Every structure is written in structure tokens, then in C-alpha cells.
Length: 278
Image (cartoon, rainbow, N blue to C red; front, side, top):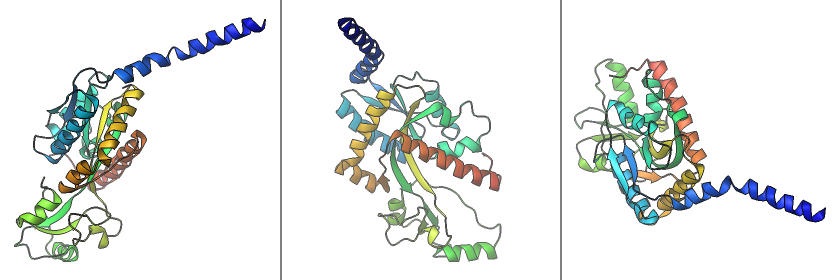
């Protein structure tokens, strides 16, 4: 009877291990061929530069090419949809930007739900946006800008610029009034934050990596481990700082929370201001 029990226990243990073995083997074999990294912005953009920096690291560490594929257009939605429709096998990654959190509310007829359809892998960087004016504009601080706007309603035109914070400061083509992050930026330590004058204000650019939902958890964890290793590398961190950003390491859950929190924040802003896509 004792021998029979031991035999049954061995059979049960072996059966329980069967579903795990193929998953471990799959993670160990990954990647077995080149991996596509879809970037939703044009070549030369900040997101593209960060993606290529990471792609080179992953290629060297994992022994397969991580190929950057730029798919800009429709407010970054074309590239995102392409990844959503890809096989969840780890061979198509999405370079995620803050636009994903904004688009979730800005566009009311998307064919996908970002939080549902893209699984978070890892955060990469946070980037300070900057508030700038033309040198001829008669203000030199956020309080002066607010006072001018109140005194001249409807006369100020606004727009965005893809240049990094450090680049804008050094170029002399624009006057930097403030950074949008909660803390001052290391690249512009003498520039105030908007929050120093408008309590509670914070708006950061950020980037990360996602994959189609149902991608094996073992592959997500492997990618997260390697991405965090890249962010801890002094040369990678220094290059990110040169581009005006700060490395942002963390778990897949950490990145998922960032996306969810940012989606909720921008939903409130978009609805309150009744913002529509142009």
C-alpha cells in the first residue's frame, strides 16, 4: 500500500509539472528570430531615438535583432492598432508613449481599448515638457504669462514642439518659462516648474514597452528584466539624460498602473475642456 501511494504521488507530481515545462522551454528559446518594435512616431522623434537605443541593447543581450518599424499617423493610433492585431508571441512589441493615455478619451471610435488590448511590459523614461514663448513675447515667467493671458483674452496662439528640454534651452530660438514635471529637471535646474505657481500642476511625457494581450507571461518577464538592466546601465542612463529624460524602471504592474492613472487623468482634462481631435 505504501509503495502504491508513492507511485501515485509521483504520477500526480509529474502531471502537475507538465503544463509548466512547455512555458519554461518557450521562454528559454525566446527570441528565436528577429523581433519587431513598432514605434508610432516618425524616424528621428524622441520616441524613435529611445526605441533604437533600447533595441540595440536588447539585440546585444538576447542575440536576435530588434528591428524598429516606424508606423506614424492618426495620432499614433495606426501603429498601436497594428500591434493590437499582431500575434501575442513576443515578436511584436509596441513602443508606448503618453499619447496612448490621451487617445483613449480623445478618440471615441477607436477599434481597440488600449488598457484591455496591450499588456504592459516595462516603463522606460519620463521626459519633461517645457513651457516656452518666442523671445519677442513680453513675459519671462509663468505668473507674467498668466497675467498677460488674462489681460489679453483670446490673443495667444499655442502649439507643440518636438524638441527636448535641453535643446530648446540651448538653441536660443525659444524662451523657456517652466518645466511641466512635478520636480525641476536636471537638464534645466534653474528653470521653475509650473507647479511652483499653479499648485498641483504636473504633466510629463513618458515612454514604455507593451505587447499584445495574451503574450506569455514568461516572455513579458524576460523583456522586463532586460529592459530594467538597460536602464540601470550608466551609459544608457547618461544617453537618456542627454535627451532630456530620466530612466524609469519598474515591473509590468508598475507600468500598467502608470498607463491607467494617466488615462484617467487625461480623460478628466479632455472632457472638462471638451477637447476634440483636429
